[in-house]
Image (cartoon, rainbow, N blue to C red; front, top):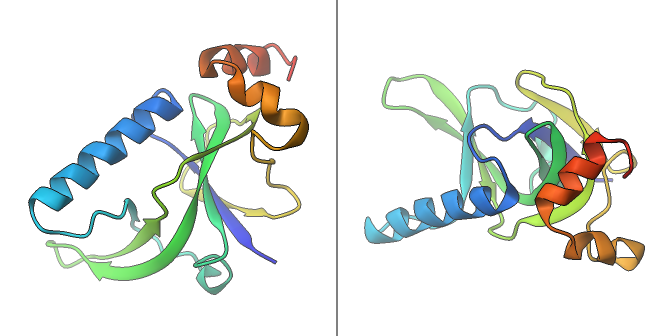
Length: 146
């Protein structure tokens, strides 16, 4: 069974802004001749990385709402220019909106089991939610209506 990571998305205030940021990074990587795959670099390495890489996703919490996910294709150990070891999560470019739910702030990441992970929007009954503007979804989640 896949294991996922739950992580706060710092900076972007919406899924659209996350997509735009990753698009800018991709364009810059292509311009410099690098790998255009989106990555997220963090200091700590997940101890359960074998259960995550190639199977799990990173679920992004945007503005207090668990909003979307990206598949994690690889977890690489890298050393920064400062000589400090880091962990690079290599992500699939597709950002998938999920059934929104409120999430309180936390540091680092949390593991998320498949059983506890929200479903993707656009599948079954969630299709109507997928068509709804993200700001409206977030407001309804904040009011406890979704």
